[in-house]
Image 1 (tube, rainbow, N blue to C red):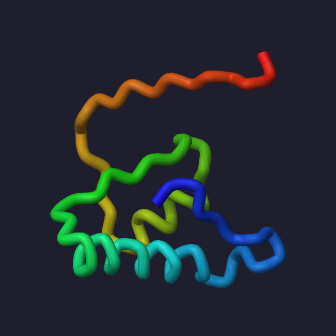
Image 2: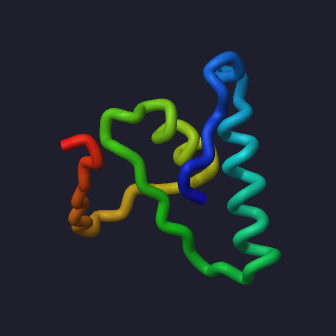
Amino acid sequence: MFWIGIHPDFRGKGLGKNLYSIGLHRLQYDFDAKRYLGATRAENVPMRKVFEANGCVQESISVISLEYSLFG
């Protein structure tokens, strides 16, 4: 469920939480997913709130993140 977002005019209305919930439901029931690993930048507080509102918990695992800049 990468690259899903809410248009700036509609943010702060709970739509992100609802959209994410629908995605999790579809992963579980339509695709038989057992786990979902979500990721966002640490400073992306709104997305972290969406995760938390949908019952996601931060696990104590190490993840390495690599970024490639297209614009040097």
